[in-house]
Length: 329
Image (tube, rainbow, N blue to C red; front, side):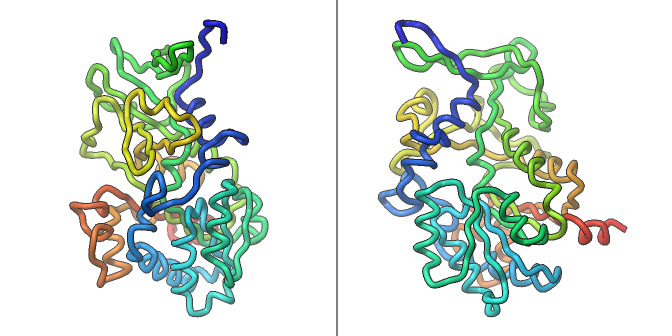
């Protein structure tokens, strides 16, 4: 670079590190999800509790709605897909679709579903077209994988975090904000130096395919927080990396570009509001622990524990089309 600095927003850096076609973590370098050789684990790979609860939920919602298509977005290792299809005694009458842009993860899913009927797509628009716009949709730990904008409260206003790259590596800088995203996090009274992350790219993604979703129910599961009360966010925010099962923060986020996972907590108030702005009706928003116990009454372990992972994860259920219209009357 001949000593010259180049700068990019935290969001642009995250997009490049995770999704660059040639060097991105998800597009090229991720090897596995869960297990000692993986960089991180998901709730689906820890035990079968979530899969059994999701299977019961999907069975009920498919029967209630009369919809005959199930779409999983960002299926990771394929563990949930295998559990959910196994929980549907009549799954051969259901078309199971997976939306996956990662070649390595798609290969994992195809291996997990070997011998089972499933269809893969590169976008939600493509998957919904195959379902004539009617589908029950679910995702687990999808939102946190979207590049986020990062902000810091400095001198009485929000500034956007950017990264300058030079001969010595990465250096964070604060920039004036031309436009704040739609987020309740940024409407709170912050402390000086407080950082906050907003997955605005997920909002744009939803808006890109919402008109193609004519009828159905969608379940979104991820780790994060709900306001009120104000979440106990670290002053430095929640942006972090995972490499070989190690959680890394600060300057470590900018190392091993394309070789480690990057993520940030999800504000479910935002996700709920983004869906409602598209005309979707919210059926429920609750901690994963309560949701798991409702759909899998004999559940035990971390997924059903409000003091464990079950209290860190949240579950949002929304519906679209004729279902939402009927319930709102």
